[in-house]
Length: 359
Image (cartoon, rainbow, N blue to C red; front, side, top):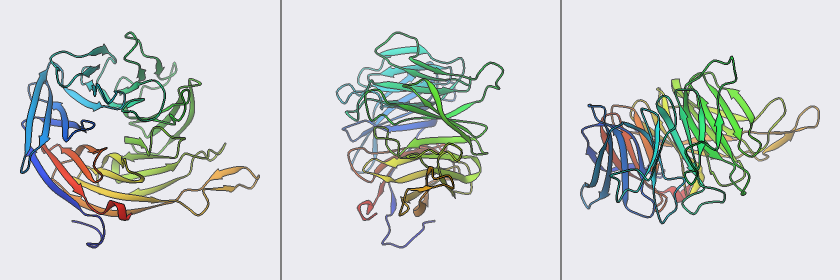
């Protein structure tokens, strides 16, 4: 069940609660001991519920039922004062919600013609610089960037060229937002394509194909000069790219690992240590990893051009939490090692990961 000895960090299931709907995503509410869960009722309506940690159980504090089922959510573009949740829905609508008064959305737009599979935010929570923006990816093949301070049109649109096959976008992630003007979006697709869009130049900065559908993407930090990007896939593989140094023909170097013996649904980096991350398994397990940098991150190729060198990935711990895929996961930004995850067994769990400072 678990890897490593007792001296390693341990993953402990602290509290759990069974719910009566399918859970697709879960996020800690910033600066609180509460989290929000989104999903779909069997009757096709959306579930949005807020839980707080009691001494011995998870306590439901607010619940809302909406017309459309929810697939994904993020706080990445909101201020710490407002703490508005952005959601992506099955019918293509993107909305933001004031969770204290969520009877009606603060902002609502018909973002896509089909389901919004994935969402990410940047420029919020007092982290980094630049405008608060939300990116959505959909089965309709498009990736769109939104500024909720503006009207209903996206500020950026990435779509297939004329004649190209439309691919299902399964994952999106913001990164490289280290100045007011620099920002990229990475998008992963069902055919294994990864495309990195530069929002300053409005062009494709880099693209590759990793053979299996891309289920999850995340930069180790959104608000720094690009450092690492992790992509998780079908058939139990994940790729850790060093995205600091780009080579004209080799692109970015990467290290590939196998885990979970199943689809890896996503990845989440520890907020307090960007070299530590958790992967989410289709077999109901979570795995904790640490990235180790090489002695030299660059080297010269045969022509003397600089190219990146990938490091190594070390599995620190793994544990099976349930019998169904882990659909959502979020680290607490305020308490190191505290995390919440959801599974397709309709259960939400608060876990504690110990001894992270030892890594």
